[in-house]
Length: 69
Image (tube, rainbow, N blue to C red; front, side):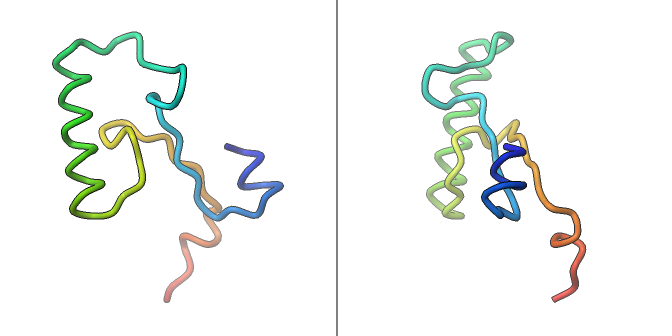
């Protein structure tokens, strides 16, 4: 994530526990299912391209997020 912000000039990078060949050790079937349902709702209604809406890792350049539009 740091390489994307530093070297590839991204302003904001989202990470996920649910990418290919990954997961969360503390998930139960209920929390996993709930996360999938809420992620689907977020993706469908708000066009959020994320796979882990309940616990997303975010890294950003703070100087860009603090700018006033």
